[in-house]
Length: 449
Image (cartoon, rainbow, N blue to C red; front, side):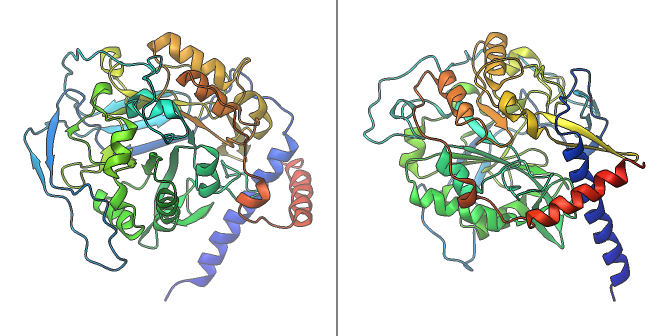
């Protein structure tokens, strides 16, 4: 029999922590983060990085018909033939939010890659009558040759919650132009949930519920290609993710690449993906096994990242994950620019990183120091091509500025109206009076600490 008093005590502790943090944020709302600020939270994940040099060619029997499988039916995995095996060894990754990484365990040496990277500066003449991902110019471009905006922690959009990273729900995000959806996944009561750090802090529910909304949107928007990046925070097997993807009806849209890993020039055009019906590219950051689930792509062998969870406004465009990736290999892979500024909040001995909400007008801006536009230019100068994805918090803050930055990178014009109204696309919050009262109380308590 469960210990109800223990459960209640744990819930009360997390509620108290949430209220304390909310109060701290209000008390320090006008304090701009200093360039010297660094976080101190350390996350250790036991999962291997895939080899950067070994290519595996797949011959998949997956049908391109996009047939809808009824709910409750038996699902079958694609038949896959592996023609080359990888010998990458597992390593334990230790990552700190102070923008440094170390890896223990053996990793293979990389061989030279001679593929010439493409850039979004080459704009093919539009041939499609319908826009692809919002632009006719994108239809004949490769998936790897387009810059899209990514919603950081897309599922977490609860009003007034300091752990939220977005203000609008996933349907509104997609309607507004978000084409990459990122989120942390944790195991809760035996089911995969979208949770921020811990499910006790913020739980957006089973991932199948969230992905079902993505499936509905894809069905209603047949000329769109969407990318999904899931953080395997509890190192769950890929089959567990596959079950939830199947339950959500998303598997019919999942794209299976012809080789592992995919270089810049290996990706198909958006139009060919649309024609095939395979319009959802799904990545798993750790623990992917494309021999087992071919459409659940290993992120770091195909998509690297700049430093994540920064607490200063410098936003360098260096390779952060996977650690040790040589420039010659990075030049042949897509990459994501992490541009979400954080504030380090200290509550007693606990260090917590939360979105720097008061900085959003600068952070999401098209120009100026610390802006998304400035980082895009930094990345372009560093790599001679724009990022594939621009990861941001609260994308709707800035009146569409994040989409203008992406449009500039893609050499197209952004003339749309942004964004969905908050009342139409946000989860409900606690009453304002309640939150205000709690905040005043917390500020008073903190002044005594």
